[in-house]
Length: 350
Image (cartoon, rainbow, N blue to C red; front, side):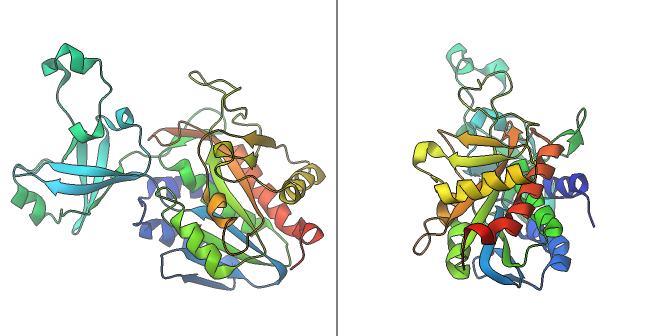
């Protein structure tokens, strides 16, 4: 049994952009298989673990993909042009070290751009844009790159390792949403529910909540819980009035996100979540956000509507290579999800 910190480290250090989540799926499968009756992969690539039981049936899910890049073009000198896969703030990419996942194996590269020394004054005042960057893998020609297995469509991920900060704080890439995956797996490990559980590692969340929509439609659960991360307002550059949750203060229960364009959680689901947190003395926070959403949005709109809740881990600097969270919050999210699966029959019938 892998502990929370070790599992998060393993998943954070692994690589899998949207549509290329295979290595993440391998880790999740290994951890989740002993906890369920069946594990399968659907035609879209979602990993589905089934623990058989009674109704109501509950889908718990977390997306497996991370934001990254994809090779678009290899020029005559072997430099790689790319497109962004998922929501990057372009300056975050500048001068990062990356891994190019070629047909023949991973290659280290760096994201290069025009040196500041030769920029015009007006160019220095502009934020750098991804369209002006390229990946340098150290070759001298297009043929050398192709001989190494680099072709259009090769995934590119950030080369950044998990590290421990002070106390229970850790940093790494792709905590969005490897933290949600850890919480989901740990919840499944802890729960004593008699309900049927569908634990799903979804694909392609960062490019349109695609895997969640497909898997929820196929499984048709009675209720669902999405596990993800969210933005805290507890550090310089942002105020609590804009993001009124804090890292280290417990799991975040979504009330509404994306100013209601995403999910507006039903009173019945909120009562279930909040009652459970209070019953088991789990510190928790409520969130109404203006921007960003989760797989919960796609799930709650499937078929004739699936009652869906969202439990998140407050995570600083998301969509960057240096995300930061509190392991205590991951543990709290897992605990709330585990207990909610046990209390679900009080609030929902199959």
